[in-house]
Image (cartoon, rainbow, N blue to C red; front, top):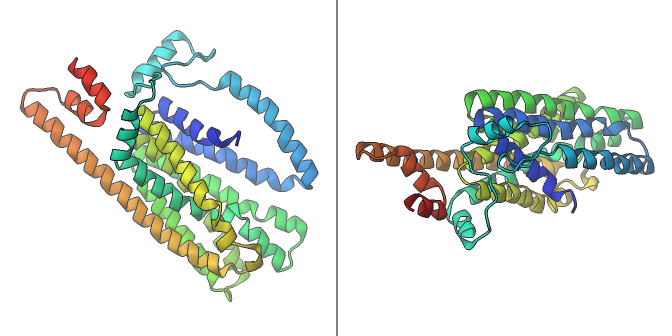
Length: 336
């Protein structure tokens, strides 16, 4: 319960400080740091030993976060930033991240736009492609077919290592191209191939190793999806916070029962139901990705028409765009 806000809160802060062309790499570094912790968890043997290490390490990290976490540019008091840097950080971002009171207008904005629905659906579905790693399917398979305890601990680390590499490479590429959707296609295709290789149980052991390591590509979607949502909601800071939190919430809602039904330990080492579900999940991810891509571009075209109309009528295109995209409160302020 205490850590529930940390993941989405950090993505929110990243979206407050970095522009779309910078955001993917930063999101990738954040998510990859979590994967790095998973990568080394295999060396923590024994439940008591692991509990002690995990418990003690949170204390200095909590203190570090209290001292270092920068808040948002408009309110930051970070000691490592000069006043000039604070002003620059705020000016370079087009979004107003100053504190605003909550109102029913916020609920209206969120519920009457497509962003909350589409982004929540996207991560609720695509997040389940991580089932290969989050449920340690490779470790259960290795254990069931007779590998040693040490091998079961260390061999699945390759899944996480490939996930880190995929996350950083894909996020860097998306920052360069500004297109997030290809990463989700890559992830879906990789997981589909992996699931088919495992589903065909007579395939060689080496091919199954390849399949499980290839499935590490599923981790690349997390950083990209949250960077995409930050980019989509960049014009409304309050909506952005709710959308990011909702994405994580709905993924957890699904994940609360998903592995129990589709990846129970009793299905090891084949996980036939799970592999079929993975193929279906990847297909659904492609559909959700297309939906977000389509409605985002439809919104862009609508804004573009408003801007061109404003310029043709001698008005300010930026003002028209702001009136269309921002809240009604901002519209009233603009009129005033």
